[in-house]
Structures are given as structure tokens and as C-alpha cells.
Image (cartoon, rainbow over all chains, first blue to last red):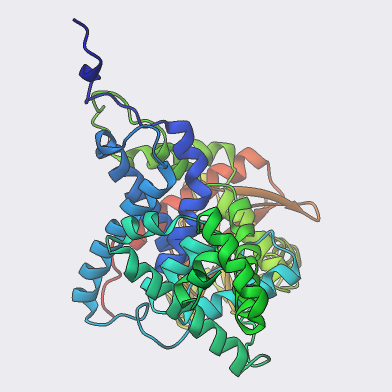
Length: 184
Length: 268
């Protein structure tokens, strides 16, 4: 009786070509989380190690990207909590001041860099959980329920974070349309 | 129609993000036709979405670092017991011989794009060509005052420097000087062999912690340069000697500098 439900639970189903293909998006999201290019790549590295360690928890056929973002969110949250205890301060979660340490892609054209710098300034001023939701929804185009899973919060929280993020952006862009200076 | 109203913020966000089921989307769409202010908000959300995507998408075109690619690939079965650090050390060693450091590649580009007049390697070559050919005054402070020289340059660069000992490669320290850099000063150490051939090591302190890179080779105006970044400093070894010999000496210098960094300098 080769029962169908006997699908081996221990199989290594994680497809590494897909993991490699997901790298650019992982790196981008890590930059959004950390606000720092080098710390972002460290975070990606830790996320991948964790993904392989937890590969049996991944359900084949589900969205690998959302799963990886979830792992990254948790790894970052743990590291962030640790660092916060160490430093007793957090520049990233502060509700004011742009995030330092972002770098502009070197291959970008001049106009691209100006625009990216402005956008980074804008979203850098959002609290991190709002910035996360905004980027996952607007840039990564994840479903709200997937974002809720990534952040480990109810979907209603995602909706209100998204709304607050957009309200802030609206006020920032309306308040000082020309005041946003390019940093580099 | 009526069940679509009133529209909430959540409705507008979900609609703008394309996250409502088709029949609800139709209801909202027809409600928006009667509410130009709300329609404008939806349009604004979509504009901002597009702006975010357009701004952040170029990041996706960056090549992934090799160590991340190997971290994404399936770990060896049964665990070979070789930790990541060892693998990356191996990879670094391999790239050392290839002389291909992606980090530097990008970095050089970045420096140029940032409006910097010359790249570091070019500055090294030009500085070398300028002073190595000067028979009488190749250096500002001669090697007989090495201690003073190193102390002075360390102070000017705000970094504990170390003049590598290249005697083993047949090159003796002639001395050194402070040179102007693009943003910060650099320190140049000059060496000479028995045939009066000269090579020089240019050291520049970078603002922030940079990534370590493998050796990279450049030829600028006929001068061969091997350059690399280690910790917060950029190093460039320049000379008109055989490329393989120059690389061998660069390795010696690199090893000594790394060793001196590993052991904190004694308190004066």
C-alpha cells in the first residue's frame, strides 16, 4: 500500500536555483530593513543559512519569496533586539531622521540616483514596520495576508501600518516638495 | 452600488494595490467615478507605488556577491565540517591569484561616478611616476629615520601605519612622504632594489569600514599597480617591474600589514 500521504516529510525540497534567483530581492529587502548595504548582505547570509536549516518547514508550491522574507524579518528582529540591548539605542526605528548607510547602485544613471536618494530619504523617515509593509506591498507586491505572515501580525495591523505609511509619505511630499536634498 | 459606500482607507489602499476581488473592484471603481477626491487619492497611491518601484528596482540589477550565491546553493550533504569562514578564505585565496575583486571594481566605478578626478590606482601610478624617477629627492623623510617617518604619516592619516619590510624580496625602504589625495592625504613608501629599480606603496585611509577585497591589477601610463582594500585602508603597490614579481611583493606587503593589524601596536 504505497499510500499517497506517505510523502517523505524529510525531503530536501528547497529549490536552490530559486533561492539564487531570489537573491537580488532578498538583498533589496535587507537594505530596506537594515538601512545599510553591508549589514544587509550579512542579513541575507544569515537568512539563507536559516532557510537551509529550516528547509523542511517550507511547503513546496508555496511562495518561496514570502517564506524567505518571513525568515529574514525574524532574523532581523532578533538581531535588532540584541543590538538594541547592546547599544541601548536605535537609530533605525527612530521616527525621525533618514537612515544612513544606504548606497546608491553604482550602475544607476544620474537621474536614477537622484530619484533613489530622494525615495530613500522619504521611506527612511518611516518607522521600520511601516516601511516594511509599504515596500512589501508597493514594491514586492506581496498580498496583504502574506505580509501579515511575514511580520507575524494580524492583517488589520498590516492595513493600518500601510495606511499610516502612506499618510506620512503624503504629508512629507506635500509639506516640502523641494526641500528634499540629494545626499550624494 | 450602495454596498460599496462608504469607502474606507483600507478599501482605497487595497484597490490601488490591486488586492480586491473583481466584483468588489467593480463596485469601488464605480463609486470612485462619483468621488473625484477619492479617485485622486487612489491615483496618488499608485503614483507613489510606481515611484518606489522605479527607484528601488535598479538595486535588482546588481550582481550578487559570490559568498551569497554559495550561501543560496544547497549545502553539501552530511556537512563537510568546513565553516563558512574557511570557504570564504578559500574563495579569497583563489581570487587573489585571479586578481579579480568585484568589490574594487564597483568601488572604482563609484569613486569615478562620485565626481572624483582620478581613481586610487591611477593616483598611485601617477604619484609613483612622479617621485620614483627623482634621483635626489624621491622621498621626504629617508629610511634612516623610519620610525619618525611612520609616526608622522600615521598621525597625518589618523591611522597606525606600518611600512612593510620588503628586504626579503630584494627591495629596501628608501623612505616616504605625505601625498595629497582626492579627499584625504595618502602615505607613500618608496623601495629600491640593487638595480636601482623602485616600487612604491601608496596607503589611503577610507572614511568608513570598507570590504576587504582581492588584489586587483591595473596599468596606468605604463606603471603596473596592484591594489587592494584591507579594513579601512586602500593600498596600491606600483612599479615598472615584472607583473608577477610585483604581485609577489604585494602579497608580502599584504601579509605583513594584515599581521600588524592583527596585533595592536604597542602603546607609545
